[in-house]
Length: 219
Ligand SMILES: CC(C)(COP(=O)(O)OP(=O)(O)OC[C@H]1O[C@@H](n2cnc3c(N)ncnc32)[C@H](O)[C@@H]1OP(=O)(O)O)[C@@H](O)C(=O)NCCC(=O)NCCS
Image 1 (cartoon, rainbow, N blue to C red):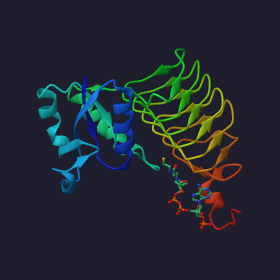
Image 2 (cartoon, rainbow, N blue to C red):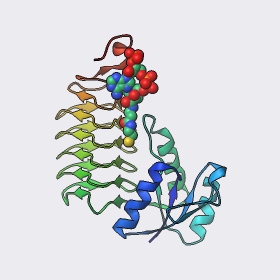
Image 3 (cartoon, rainbow, N blue to C red):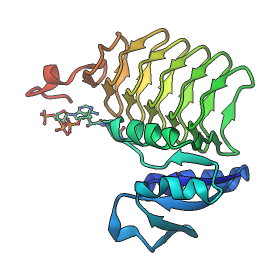
Image 4 (cartoon, protein in one colour):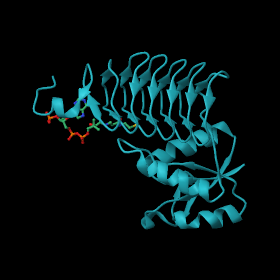
């Protein structure tokens, strides 16, 4: 399988590494909106141009793509790239680093990326274009919407539901059965013990909306 990676920054390094380690596809090119990167390479893969090259890449025999840009809050750019590449007729590649564990009883959507030491347990459903980042844990029966980012080292206990496009920050812990709304953001290190409304940002232990924390000593 020949694939293209969309985005040539830091997250792409880890994605390409995982693809190479898995041996399931060959990354033949990277497309990146940043012109200063064109003509350079990342871990042996050439950055050949911008997203306007998608049709040409498809015509050259590349069949698959994966989004290689990360996110620290807003997952929108990742969603838009995914939709653009899908509309061009490319197929979203499921990437699993060989050290990641995904149960045969879990379901994983196309374009999702399980990085080193990530775990997705039995009965979990992970949508399309989801990042389960390095060392993150998605426990049994969780339901993860499309384009979500479960950041490095975050841990979701059983039965957690995460709405489309949400971001669960690095090292966050989410109690079992919690619902995190669409495009919500859980700050790094938060401990979530109550449901999170769509498009809100929560931080802290226990997690509370960011505006409640503002002006207070978070300690
Ligand atoms: C929650 C978050 C989105 C807020 O970002 P922001 O809106 O730019 O917030 P700011 O950095 O301006 O901070 C605003 C206030 O919230 C506090 N704050 C920010 N993030 C916090 C967090 N994760 N936990 C506790 N407090 C936090 C700040 O200390 C600041 O408090 P103050 O007003 O008393 O000084 C961001 O800090 C965060 O945690 N993002 C997740 C990053 C991540 O997961 N990265 C890994 C990618 S693999």
